[in-house]
Image (tube, rainbow, N blue to C red; front, side):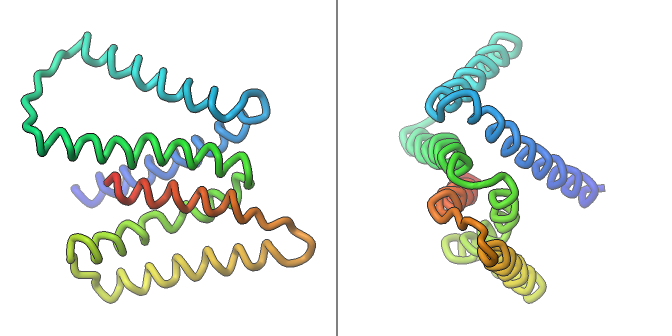
Length: 167
């Protein structure tokens, strides 16, 4: 049952990220990057306020916990959303989606480096194939007169790193 929940969560996360890329790319044709970013944070803040009005919570955080919250809030929402919007403005949704596919592999790699978690052989092979597949698809897209969006792709990779550090 827990594996089904994890699978459902992974599929839901992938759908939300994919739709997010598509909606951001569409909105970039109508508005500027900073306005879209401001609107995202405004709606998130309003959602949080609505949640707090419906179900108030009381937190008691010490200084160390507050610092951890500040670091996480810098990495995930601020760096992730900023680099995602800036990257999508410079690249295509397809390229961003392909690059985003390596997010779980990057998360596992960072966990093994910083948290000293053991990576099983199957996980290692999955990481290698995932990253090799992304590199292969990018190289195939860059041949034959296709524009390679280096800056946009690098910004999408920054958003992936922000996601991995925020987890």
